[in-house]
Image (cartoon, rainbow, N blue to C red; front, top):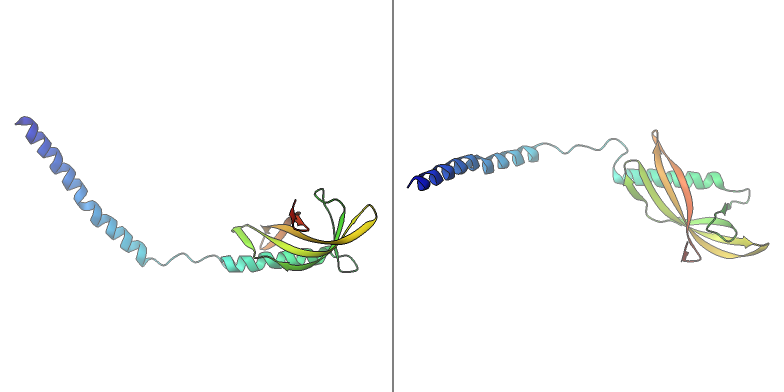
Length: 149
């Protein structure tokens, strides 16, 4: 009989301790629902950041153009020198509040050993927040004539 009373006492204590928990959880959930969600900092919504990243990519591209309007690009992954123009930018991927990337489609020529041929390329732009703006920190070859590099 002594064991039964001890078990009953323990069960009563546990039941009383747990009785308030569902009510407390409901009250906390209700308070959380009543609080307005935190607004993102100005210019920091995903769509705004994607627009800013794309603008930084286009500005970087424009700054690299030669006198004929071509981006002349050399990379260890290339068998020669690319002279290309931007066709379009794929949708921007915002990694976090300070990093984004996008791939651009390019068309032009690849010159190797003094011989030129038409070529298409996908170039990757990695972009980071710098101060209040964005800056391209890396430009690399993703594909050449549809073949991954």
